[in-house]
Image (cartoon, rainbow, N blue to C red):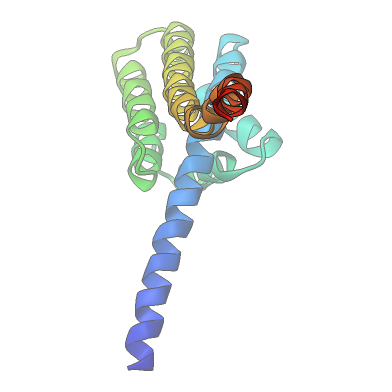
Length: 170
């Protein structure tokens, strides 16, 4: 029985940990992509840019980039290591970035243009998620206003009238 409880607790802890790591990776992703795009636009090769990002950045996404770099050093192509990177992280944004970068490399498209579009798209997605979070926070902040401040304001407005009506009845 205790083994079952431990496994259940461990499973819940692991899923929470994975969720926290995914949220951390997604929050770090726009700045990492922007750094990667700047390096590639400056003339660095994608593999060198990957190395510099993994050296300079800290956090979840930098670790994932370092893992892709290890795959690259082990003999896999850049496309294969990016595909593994996209598969490791369960984020559609990161997967889309990896797929777009793989397609650009395979087709010979200008990487700096593709990466600049990806940076704009990622920033727009982050902006949209911040707007959704702000909308939810706005609604939750309305609850104290409606149930606490508004009734107290009405009470302060009506209390003198109630007191004067009570005195006039006597």
